[in-house]
Image (cartoon, rainbow, N blue to C red):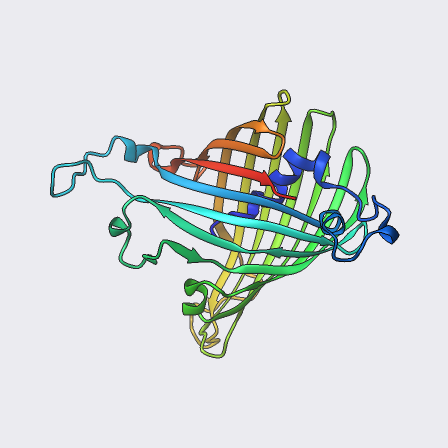
Length: 293
């Protein structure tokens, strides 16, 4: 789902860290029924995240027109993800992330290869989440997940699983500042019909500044290295498994507004190539983060 996950955990932690790090043993567990609402609220942590990607800035001034004379528009895609954690212990959680996407605009204007349905299923993640260290100013987490190929795109590419191991370091040098360093390794497990191999490493830095109780500013840099190759070792272009090349190099800036403690809205500008800053390589978007439980 594009790069939803790149800020799902990070931004959720940055904006809601003071409210979502509740211990699994805060309440008197011995006095609660295993199926009581209080027990479920104690054990479950559910956040919602969405990302809406608009057109490039150049597209705003584009003079392309439709047959009826109106200005040509491109539908926008809105990605939705739920970050669900079940607290087994204070530090060890079960993790699941259901994901879907929707289209804003006329679906008849979609590319011929795009899925025309109103709601499009994306790959879901299942795994475990563990906090190795936590203090008032520093936190280190690890997560290991299997990304199930629920999307048509993954199935068409013969992907059985996307196995991910990620870790993030969170540092608060001052109460209003939060710096998160995030790293992810993803291995694409293909079925027997596949003719390629693929894996990817992502490095992300997120800097969040809490201006006041309503506003926060953040900057995010994302850098991806990818190996994608044919399985045919006799092919002259066959590369070593450890051969990687740059895949993405994004920079984003956003200003967040929290109308209530459980909701944050962040309009942002994304620079698709920091080495080539032009209207064609810059786009606008919107992030929304909500705390459900």
